[in-house]
Amino acid sequence: MRTLIAPGRHRAGYHIALAVTTVVLTAVFVVPLVWVVLSAMKPAVELARVPPTILPETWTPATYAEAWDLMDLGRYFLNTIVVAVGVWAVQLAVDVPAAYALSRLKPVLGKGILGMMLLTLMMPAAVLLVPTYLTIADLGLLNNPLALWLLGAANAFTVFLLKRFFDQLPAEVLEAARIDGAGQFTMLWRIVLPLSRPILAVVSIFAVVAAWKDFIWPLLVFSDPARQTLSVALQRFAPDTPVNLLLAGLVLSSVPMIGLFLVFQRHVLAGLTAGSVKG
Amino acid sequence: MRRRVAENLAAYGFLSAALICFAVFSWYPIARGAVLGFQQVDFVTDPVWVGWENFERLFADPLFATAWRNTLLFTALALVFGFVVPFLLAVVLNELRHFKAYFRLVVYLPVMLPPVVAALIWKWMYDPGPGLLNSALRGLGLEGAAWLDSADTSMLSLVIVATWANLGTATLIYLAALQSIPGDLYEAAELDGAGVLRRLWHVTVPQTRFVLLVLLLLQIVATMQVFTEPYVMTGGGPEDSTVTVLLLLYRYAFYYNDFGTASALSLLLLLVLGAFTALYLRVTRKADA
Image (cartoon, rainbow over all chains, first blue to last red; front, side, top):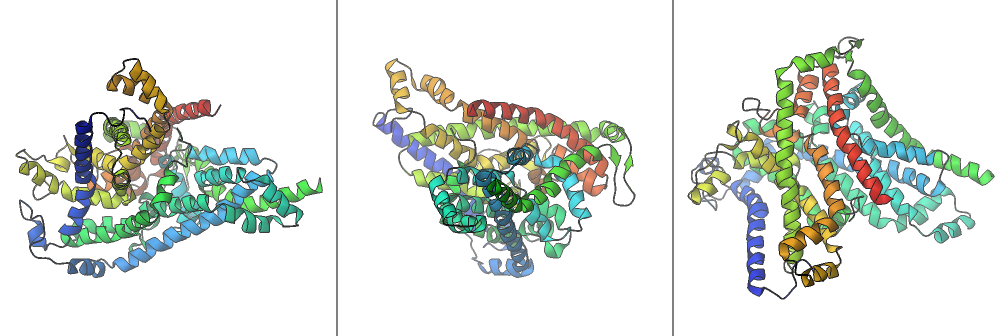
C-alpha cells in the first residue's frame, strides 16, 4: 500500500532508516529489560562496580530463588492473582448482563442509565480517590479484595464495549431463539455469549492487565502488609532490599504480564483500537 | 404489552448488580466528593461544615503553588515527549515494510510492565554511579547527569520514565490511524510536487487530526494526575521539585488524615481537568455526528 514515501524509491535510504529504527528501538525498549534480567544474576558487590560489567562475572541465578524466599513473593503473587482473577470474574459477571440488558432488552430509562455510566468515564479517577476510599472504609472493606473487585465492576468502558458489540449481533438469530421459547438467561448464556468470544477476550485481557498493573487502589485498600499485591509490596521492600534481590523480584513479578502479552498479543493489540478512538 | 413488562423486569434483573456497583463506587462518591470539600473530615470525629476553610488552608500552603507548577511542568514535558515522539515514531514505522511484528512487540513491551516495576527499574538505572544511563553516557565520552538527585533534572527524569512506559499505546493507535489513510492522497500530493515534509504536514496530519486531538486531550487529563512515578521514585523530592497535585492530595488525605482539604484539592483538580474533558466530549461528539 502507498504511504508517505513511494515504495521502491530511495533503496539505500530505506535500509539505513530500517537499521537505525531497529537499533534505536532495541536499545531503548529491550536493552533495559535484558539488563535487569542479567544484573539480577550479579552478586551485590559486582553490581556496585563502576563501570558496570556487561555479562555477570560470577553468575548467580540462585538470586531469583533467594529473592522469592526472602521477600515471600509467593504470598504476594497469590494476593495479586486473587485480586486480578476476582476483578475479571466479577467484572464479567456484573457487566455482561448489564450490557446485554441495555443492548437487547432496551428497558425504560435504559438510555439514561447508560448515559449516567458513561458520565463516570469523564470523571478523572484522581478526583474520586478520597470519597471512594471513605466509602470503602464505611463499608468495612479495607484490607478486603472485595473492595477492588466491586470497584472494578463499576467499569463503564467495559459496559460500553460489550453493549456496542451486542448491538451488532444479527437480530434474526436472537429472534429465532426467542420463538423457540428461550428465556432471557438462556438467550444470553447459550446464544449471545458464544457469539461474543472476541469482545469477551478483549475485555478480559483489559481487566486482568489493569488489575495487575494497578498501584494506587491496592496501596490505599491494603494497609495490612500480609494482603498487599506485588506492586505495593515491592515498593515497600525497595528501600532496604539488596539491589540484586530487588531486581530479581521486579523481573519475577513482570513475568506473568509479559507472558500474557506474548501469548495473547493479537488480542491485546486488537483491544487498543477497540475503544472509541478509531481513525 | 405483557412482553414489554416481562422484558423490563428481566432487564432490571440483569442490571441490578451493575446499578448497585455504579451507585456505591461511582455515583455516590461523585456526589460525596462535592460535599467533602466543604467539611472537616477525619476518622475520629463526625464531619463538620467548615465552608471555604479547606480551600483557604490550601491557598495558604506554600506547597500548593509548587504542586501545580510541578504538575504543569510534568504535563508540558510529557506532551513534548509523549505526544510528538509516538506520532513521529508511528509515521516512521508505517513506512518500514520489514520487522513489523518485532517493532510492534518491542514498543508495547514496557506497557505491560506494572508501573511500579518500571519506576523501580528506572530508579536503579538513574543511579549516578553504577547506573546504566550514566555508564552508557560515560562510555560515549559524555558526562553523566544527577537525574533524580537534582531538583533541576528530577521532573525530566520522571517524564522520561512515564514516556518510556506508555509510548507504545499511543504509537500503535497512531499506526492504526495512519494505515487508514488512502494511498492516492499521497500519490496526488506528490504529482502536485509536494515533498515529503509537505506531504506529512498537508496529508498525514490532517488525515489523523481527530485521533491526534483525542489522544492529546486524554494525555493531558492523564498526565495531570501523575502519582505512581513521583511516589515511588522521589517521594516528592529533592527540594519538593516533584511534589505533584496528586502527591499533595495523597499527603493531605493519608498522612494528615485531613480528608476535607484533600477533597477541596480534588475539586480544584476537577475544575481544571473538567475543561479539558468538556473539550474532549465536544470533539468526539462532533465526529460521531
